[in-house]
Length: 221
Image 1: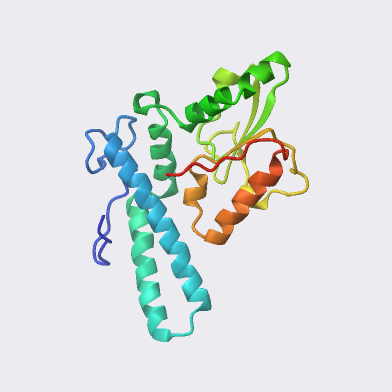
Image 2: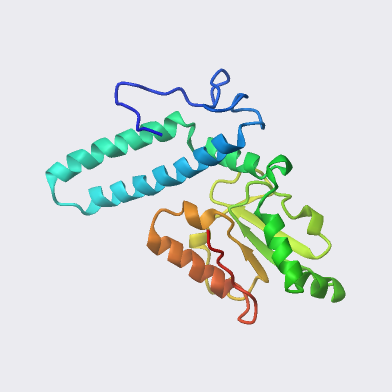
């Protein structure tokens, strides 16, 4: 998607009359074209990462020429993010992408892995629920079908539901959460973190939050 010109302001796709490009429904609906939904989510990832890079350049750079260009690029990116509807639309589109008509969310894959390595059966045999920390939860009931053997604690940086705790995973106390959880789900959260250092920190926190004998998997894309 090309960058917006400074003289043009796109209407946020949260507006009631504004359809999402490439879809046959308004953005408030849940029937957006799957390809358009994926494209929009990927675009948000690119924009957020680039925005963080430009802010870092403006903080640390020493060339006035570079600063002028960086400020202009940053304004264009912020305009495009606003034109796409902002974080609210990103979250809604991500939630739409988790719908059953799109194949469901990542929890289906996660549960499948747990079944393969026998964790599901072990939890049921011992009648002891696995403690799950779901980071970046968009819906509070992603693991409701597993409630007999999973105790889910969903968190998100910008909670959209009262049952989802608003919490920055990177600011959680490492020692207080050391080996506290049996399972940690990051889903696509790692991809959304703009700084490589913070992505590494996130993986390190997830690793220390589970017992040493537990599995830690980082799937390849």
